[in-house]
Image (cartoon, rainbow, N blue to C red; front, top):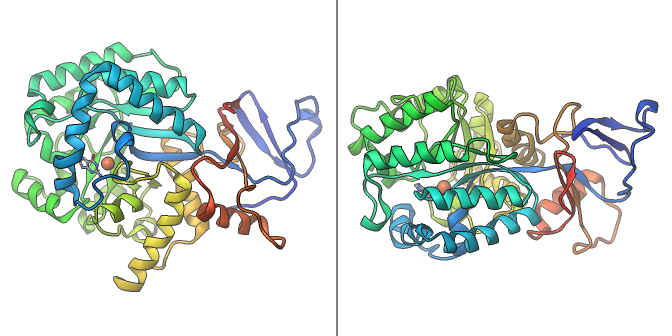
Length: 404
Ligand code: GUN
Ligand code: FE
């Protein structure tokens, strides 16, 4: 992390030109915005969040993953078959994300193609950059929230075609929910769609021990959980892929992710709330695996990636103290990297103030967190990660466009 005090961040044509002690002569004609005294940082990326779960965040947090899915999540997501319900709920979600620090989001919808299109419309209207997925599930799901295999693929195809080119900042991503809810035949069809439309992929991986044992029974042919995705061409290589959690990924799975450039979305708040465990992020980083942060609302109760950064540091300390003293805890600067450039790189050049990056910029508001004595800029940023609320942001720019 590089910190500069009292410098000029130069932007033109929606792109960062650099950070300078004086404005270079060639940029002297640009409009000047004066944020003296404020922290100015790159926009944040949430690599894993569920749009339809936003309205029940903070509920049923005393359940573990599979129980939580059946008791709370699937019944709620089933309601998004009603476009009017979807519109209201997704507007709440998108407008709240707009007010927070997230510039880029990778989002799960539901199995409904119309509802998922509404989610895309609301995120586009909110001015955010996003990948959005229509979820696929054809087994181990309730009768009113399950697709027939062929319908699932056909609806996904129709959804891809109907939304192609419809948005400037929102794009589709293939979203098999996770192996327990997707039959081999469905995965095969999704693999075909991936190759036909060259879409990225997102899913869940090695989150919870009960889930992993179940996958072993359901997919006996797979060498390990992640191999079950790769068998259908849905696990990195030429396919940009994000896998959420990876709390229990073994050596082979991690090596495969490293080899194939698969991103891990680390979701510490969710892993805490639904008692999944603590992912060894230091290990991921030491191995050179790509890692970003996910709020995983509503496993996570807060959509704030600032909170997620602080919690990534916190849980890494518990892991270090209680589980494995060879893996040093994360620093605030490392967590900041994960929430900015770490995840932002999935979107191309986002999450840094290096020349050529998208002008995704946050001007932070520390007025609700006064201090008695002068702090360094780095200290102020560290403190902000811990103390900020979801909306302590003064200004937000996406690709050079001011949202507020
Ligand atoms: N695994 C499958 N579906 C989900 C979900 O909605 N949330 C989380 N955290 N894990 C999942
Ligand atoms: Fe999730």
